[in-house]
Amino acid sequence: MATAATSRRLSTKPRSTLVCNQLYRGLETNSPSLQETQGGSAGRRVRYFTAAELVETLYRAMADNSVGKMIETLLRFDLVIVDEVGFAPLDEVGTQLLFRFVAASYERRSLGVASHFGFDQWGHFLPEQTTAASLLDRLIHHSTIVVTAGESYRMREARKKGGGAKNS
Image (cartoon, rainbow, N blue to C red; front, side):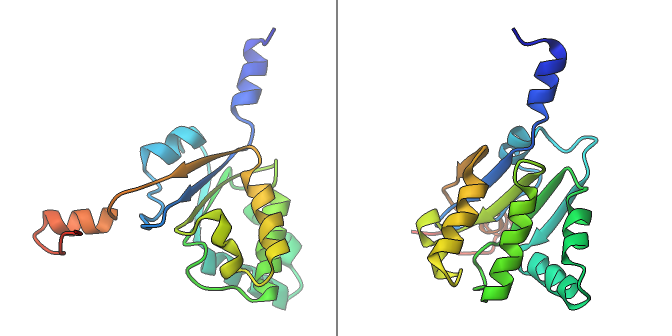
């Protein structure tokens, strides 16, 4: 039988959320789906990166031999959001840095990850299929996967203002 304290511990367990869509909608950090799956951000420390910004941050840390320290600093946040995964292909070093970050956060911190690529396509922007499989293995375990459909938030807003063409 679960006590109130046990229930609280279980509900605050780190979880990841992956948002995927062929028609990329981006990760709306205030979207109901992210807030519901992550329990909202009230009182939680949240850090947002695009995938390129995260990898660049880790590359800079590698230059002064402080990657481990940088990862530990980032893992002090309750939630780290990584958007636009797959927009730019990663080289082997960038992929290893991203993998190292995901592996370090595994079962320790919540991640929000957004990509317009399906999981079967991650090998297209990561140099090795085995790395893609290992990365996804850690991201998918204990996570909520949200597959979105429909038009882009930005296109919808532009249409409301009178701009943007309607998709047919």
